[in-house]
Image (cartoon, rainbow, N blue to C red):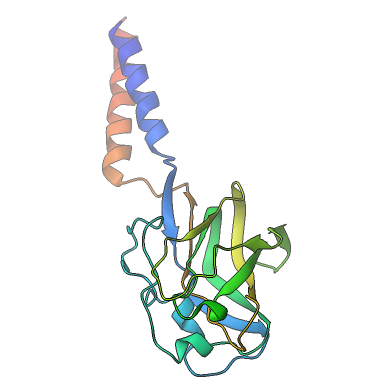
Length: 209
């Protein structure tokens, strides 16, 4: 019975060696693919946390809100639509996309958003098609629009296309973040030491038996 119990402990240690957990993925860079960029504010405003009421990585992304009322930000794009590429600076398994619309005048907000998830060599993994966002919004704070495509593996870039709501001649997206699954995390040396010790005890117990 002692040997069996020890084997169960070994299995538990080995299972710990490959944990899987969700984490917040913050894009590290953004480039313009199409559309007219007004150059009033940096494109990085969409990913740098400046548009979130809670900027921490552990923020509850379902309730965090866009909180900027800067008039210049409302004129980020002056075309009916625009596309950007988000660089995740690595390869991630993405579960959800979170998007906050701007909280400027209603005609400046975004009507639809589309995600194209790409591999490290820029091959399309999945295309969401146009997703309708709530609105028109007016001058209000709003919770994020959550899109759940299912687990998408090895995503390095995300192309995002915004379409302006009818009316007006400019618009500005809010913040964009993702959540995903991280696996194969390096195991602390103490865990491997425990595993080795348990395996040694199992081997010794078997010899005495």
